[in-house]
Length: 207
Ligand SMILES: [Zn+2]
Image (cartoon, rainbow, N blue to C red):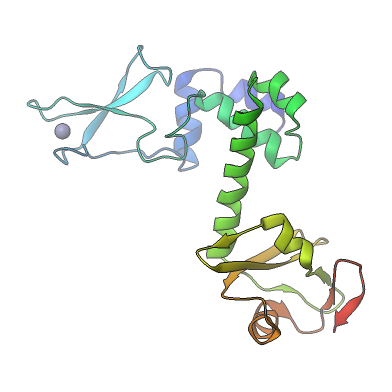
């Protein structure tokens, strides 16, 4: 995938919806939030998504946004623009200049909000799916910058994490505090034996 191919893939509103449905970003069926009747997927020119859900209940016939209960829900941007922004962000190309040029988003505030949102979605995924990293011959980073980068103090919980730059894999877990008694069992659980663990300054702290 590159930006040109993404642009070609997202050539129409139909194609955008299909792309999102294949990736489970938009559901393939929706029940009416009011009467629970299954909705039909219909073309709707007056909305910028080009499609919407419509309740089949003849007494209701309520229209429901395609974005209902999706990642795109709160945004004023088109889904295509959001997908392009995600592409740039995922490949570390989402500088303000690039986002302005490729996505036509002029508000720095919107760009920052989206970048924070995307980061939070990934942090949340990693928190919910922690995996073991490292192993013999691997060096993983575990340092203050992990905390500083995340700046996540969620309801009194801290986010603690480690990253293997060679494998581009990491884990994040929430912890009640950052004491050694709390962190050491987590290090044992998620960092495989034989791993070299380094701190910010690159000094091995354990092996
Ligand atoms: Zn209904």
